[in-house]
Image: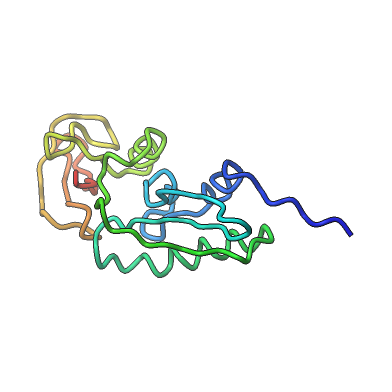
Length: 156
């Protein structure tokens, strides 16, 4: 009997790319920047993750989803390491993730502190409705042009 070859680190990253963020399912935890590191330590796979903010309630679901995704590929000797320093930042969002957020109707983070344009009609005539949106990492905005409300992913 031949032992199964363990997947490469790149193959593991590809597997994790299929794990959606539970709060914004259009974006993967890889594109969100939650997965920080993947490495083999002998026969144990170590996956380091960082919550988007300390106390994030989605981390339990994310951890379970990572284990489920890896298990579906036959990987059971997995160690999940939660690392809170350095803290997560919106700078860790991939360009693909930023584009997916906007296509989904969520304005991606901007260093100026507010959205540049409406993710629906692309107008720059927008206003803040509330500093807090559907999750703590988002604020509620509205477009004055198309009148649609939208979430803005806060710059952290």
